[in-house]
Length: 307
Length: 312
Image 1 (cartoon, rainbow over the protein chains, first blue to last red):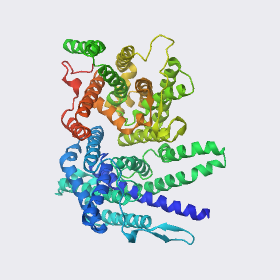
Image 2 (cartoon, rainbow over the protein chains, first blue to last red; image 1 turned 180 degrees about the vertical axis):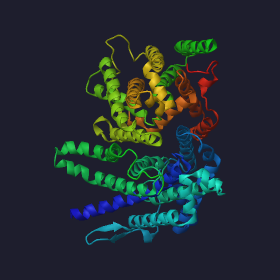
Image 3 (cartoon, rainbow over the protein chains, first blue to last red; image 1 turned 30 degrees about the vertical axis):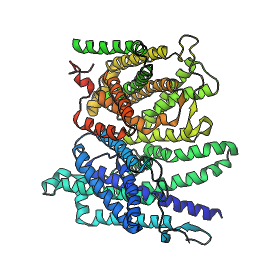
Image 4 (cartoon, rainbow over the protein chains, first blue to last red; image 1 turned 60 degrees about the vertical axis):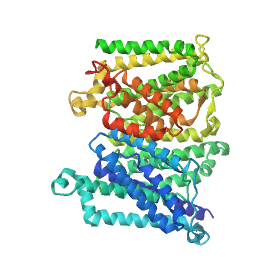
């Protein structure tokens, strides 16, 4: 039975990794192109989750609610970019960190005013509930499987857009030399707003998919944001390929660590000691991994500025 | 420079008079508030050493508040109540943690440095959350305050107030002396032009690492003070928003000035206190306020002082 258990936890890790990737892709794109450190990326994740919950309740239809939630997050993202962040591109990272930190406080409190501090729970439509049998002897929740599928499809779509389309060409060009792109007659401000909105929508997608799995509450964005930082530090900042590899590694290591570290330690040290050390070590595992990667490769695994 | 010295001296005199004024006005709450502010001022002063002078944007300074606080808390948990021991351990443990974090992070630059310091602090935060022995995420109470062999009673709010004031001024003096020493020159040189400082024969790494460790140690002291102030220690000491607040104090007050971080701590925490007294949703006002400060108020409060053309 243990292989089945390991398989299930691997899938859970994949599911978590896919969500981390959706977040990391937006963050790393915005950093790579606008050179902006956006701490408020986690707030957009939260906004996506809340807007979707509200829209699903309002329309009574899950797919419609998801679409409205995504569109709403896209709009909120573009609005934030135009109002607050646009002036920050030329500033140093310190100013960007502080200003977006201010935005986080604002968004968390605004959400608390509108929806209260208690966690919300989303009800899934019946076709997303229940379980499927992926390998014999193992049943897996349909919803989590759908999350993995959506994440992989969006990831492939992202690759296609960035590598094969005109917009992607502009994005890559903007990352390597923004002055030249502007000189060639491209409206760089519009491009920035579009890319930011695009990243916001990806964060919103991660947030709305997280809703039914984790609790929807103010501050939910920061929990994942810092893990996303670990992902892009491991992957190499500005690199989408790095974000994908980093996200899958972090997702799987974190999930497997939480599931198996305690019983594994039990083989080597006394059970009470493993009981105490297991969870502590499991929660530190991804940070240790990050330290290890940085000790070997200070620029991350894929240090390209874009890709 | 004279007007500036006078204003700062007036500030110190005002701080000296706070306990008397608060007692006179029958508002002992203010002794408590200003003491807390001064403890955070120490943390901000320590961060300024690496952030303001060294240009190392550490987004994890709350880690040392936590390490200092937990050192005191854990020793007290096992019945070691001597303040001499507790506070020395707090400072040494913070220095040690800063050495480990710094050894990895100081090698990196810019955005990597920001994210790595943040991530390590988060790691310590989760460590504090998951160790059930010391209260997990509920934290634990400090039953007995640090004992200084009868020399000073931290349970006496006024005596403790003056101790914190003295330590805050001492920390500012230490940073002032450090910055104007040969060591401080190297730190500042590495900030303004790393390539050039290498060219004249100073590899910045050991100097920056040393500054990082000193900064962590001073902040560990603030942690030891804070746990005695609140009589409680929780992982929330190390919450990453705490790091952000300390960082903001430095910027608001004025980077790379000696009085700046303390001014920033006063401004931020007193505004927070006023807003919190006014509405429960004060953060919805504070957040945009922070954004506006970053966008339009770049020189900080210390920049408003007369004679602020050069470093204090």
